[in-house]
Amino acid sequence: MKLAKKKITVGITGGIAAYKAADLVSWLHQQGADVQVMMTKGAQEFISPLLLHALSGHVVIIDMFANDDKLHIPHIYGVDGADLFIIAPATANIMAKAAHGIADEVVSASILAATCPILFVPAMNFHMYENIATQENMEILQRRGYHVLEAEEGRMACGTVGKGRFPEAAVLQDAVMKILFPKQDLAGKKVLITAGPTREQIDPVRYLSNYSSGKMGYALAEAARDRGADVTLVSGPVKLLAPAGITVIPVVTAEEMYQATLACYGEMDIVIGAAAVADYRPDQTASQKIKKQGAAKDGIQLNLVANPDILQALGAAKKHQYLVGFAAETENLLENAEKKLIAKKADMIIANDVSQPGVGFEVDNNAVTLVTKDGHYVLPQMTKQALAEKIWDYIMVAAEKKNQ
Image (tube, rainbow, N blue to C red):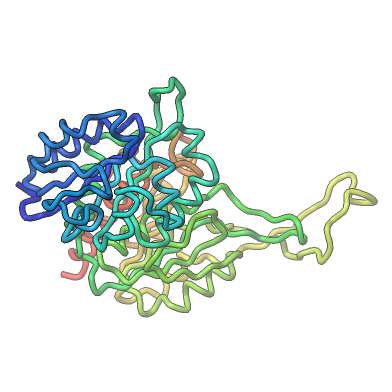
């Protein structure tokens, strides 16, 4: 009965995945939660309120204007005193309403009335999920501090294959437990993370860079924040939303990242260099666009000079900090990671083979090996969010052991 004494409200909206909400309600009830269900009119086209009544043990709220003394004001009553409000499935429509403050039925009105954490569980056709309006609405919700679970990829009821599936039960259950019972093992700790690529300018329109999206670094930063840390994120140029509750220092070049990182390094407890920093930069930057004419029509020659080695500088200046670096490799993964561990005076190197399909740069999944002086720890392919939690679990154990 892990959820005993917890009141959880489940808002079901009109997507074909509405039937999967029945499993969620059943699980919540079996775990001892007091579950109140509410449904939009669209949701009732897919699943019966009577079924949810039987699974939850409470009358399902379906009408914002119901004349029922037991429910009193339905959209207030349904979330009053709730520990968590789960919108599952969360359609593009309900997220658009929530993002823009529309309250025209009981679920959307309850979102505005709720004072507890809210978890949106998106599920829809992948074209709808990838539409810029839906993506921007999800970003708005996240910026306001709501939890938005990422949709899964696979075959959908409409026959298409893509990203937009309702998550597997274990994934959703894990998200619920993390919101209700967050780890606080990083409380009181100051954490510094670098993320994303750097850009080294050639001329006003061209630069040298790499494929890093910043997703792994951002996932690590968000996980640390949720576990109680005071997090500073030094970020290269990415297309990701600045996480709420995190101090973000935007940079562009390797030199800027070097200066920003070293400036706050001394006060940090744990530092993770997850950024893909450019090793070299042009020795000169053209003040005007290099035109494809004259001597340049047959090609140009770039003279590259080394950028500062941020991880090496951090290792040299290390005192009390627990220092973690990344090694993105295409061959000799463990050998190169072990060399980097020693050369940079790091406490841990997180090594990943970016030549493997489906993991590494620009994708949502990753698979890594944690390399320390005590051995290797293999973490198989999983989402970067899940991987971030696993990495922090290992770091906390290793850091505590180091300080003993």
